[in-house]
Length: 121
Length: 121
Length: 121
Image 1 (cartoon, each protein chain N blue to C red):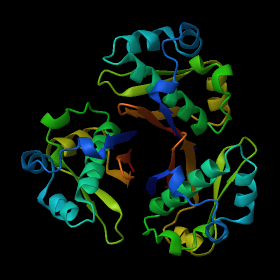
Image 2 (cartoon, rainbow over the protein chains, first blue to last red):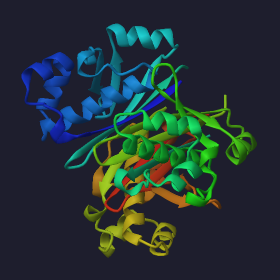
Image 3 (cartoon, one colour):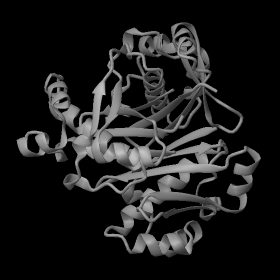
Image 4 (cartoon, one colour):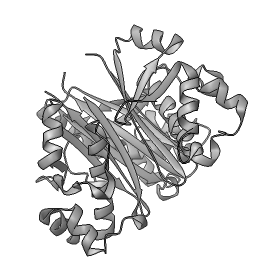
């Protein structure tokens, strides 16, 4: 149905700003990222992931003003990231016949990248 | 059928060279990129996109000598990029049973990346 | 079934370390990379590719300790990369119903990125 790619400079994602974090990440995401060796990298990777999922749905990213917390990226039992959609994001996916969004994340010391694929089967 | 990824340093794409631009971009692409906040970034992202589409078709990229203008990347009503194939690129896609190529683009201050997926259904 | 993305700083992949190379790359991969204009870039791109394939299979990457040579990335007659799975990687793919993994690689002067898509049809 659609694909999405995004990259973010880790230093450009304000993960130490509590307002930014609580507006854009769910409680489970915040708990996960804070438990990682580099929380800033984990927040940036998930932020890139949220943008990539938005792009894969073919709707325009509304940036920081959108309910990015409606796109939740958690980890399965193998540590692989999984996407859960809520609210407007879920509505947009349903209207396009998207049943699942696959995601992968990667970060270096400075840059986080993400790839998302919206599938319909 | 195939996937393609490409990255380009924005500074390495000679988007202020009129010969390079008119050889490799269509009139609609040029009009779009020149209307963006950072034309150089937009040209670089589309250049990466053209390379990624080439890779997704499983044919060897012929670089600057190829008719890269045969791979046209425009924007739909939501601002999402869409691929139109012409000429040799269309022929290559048809011969592989590729009916549509999905694309996503992203750029930071310095680097543009693109991902393409050739699909057959 | 799954997607995977990875990026590696070319300078961080110890491609001049014979132990690292022979543990993680097959004889065909080594021959290919050493014949390229920049062997370090080619080794780094394939290393990123192996990580991306691991992620696309939804199993946890075991890093340098895993049999990364079980994921072999060669080139077809057009120069496009193709994935061959052996050993544990083949077993993991079979158990998930993965029949083919598509891959694309890209590198700049400093960074290699890879994208993999595991498919079931």
